View (cartoon, rainbow, N blue to C red):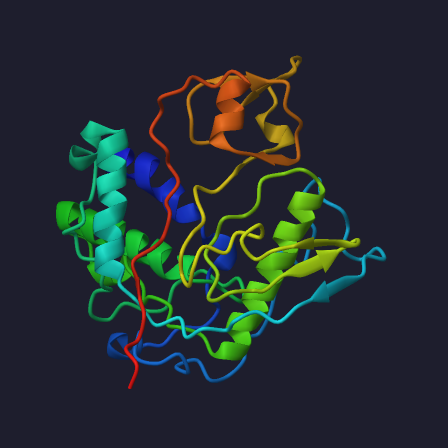
Length: 288
């Protein structure tokens, strides 16, 4: 059962590692209390999109862009429990056996008493990091329950909401990454933004925030595209395996992102459960 949990769920958690936090509060009661909980700028090791995605134009080359102001709305508070319920409903619809293969929406996503900060340390992060850590904690709590392991060693604190400066930095970086992908004909990174990044002009072409993947505060715009690398190529052939799925594809290029639909058109057997998740359930703060 542990192996099944790892196969079906951990790859979901991996989706948001590039947006994982570098700092977290140690007090769970403070996690979602204030957008200013993280009042100091996070040290940046690598911003999402600061390095070119494989197969994308190098941003170090002359590439004038113009960032237009977006509506920086208050992101409100993440409704983690409601999102998990929605997530498992999607998974069970795609795969009826999901419920018996691992945690469910009722599995605790809270870190155990004494749990430390996550080992993920990747700089600025977006809303997806909150949900990915919640899923990781569910895996940890289930594992501890079945094996008798210490749950404190299997779970970690959830990231809080960063300050507005870091929110804006993350949103701007994600928008630029997606503009690069659109320029090169690849599907965008569908990770959630903190707020509207506004329009962005690159190489004389202006992309709206909707084209850049903005679907509302804290809302993913869809399943994450799948990256096909050279390591996925089957030696001596022009065929590639697809990470997280059963089957092979042809007619694709290494070093590029593809949607699941595109890969099915390239030969991947259809009907497989979508291993991607789409964060949502973001509660806006009430006026006053």
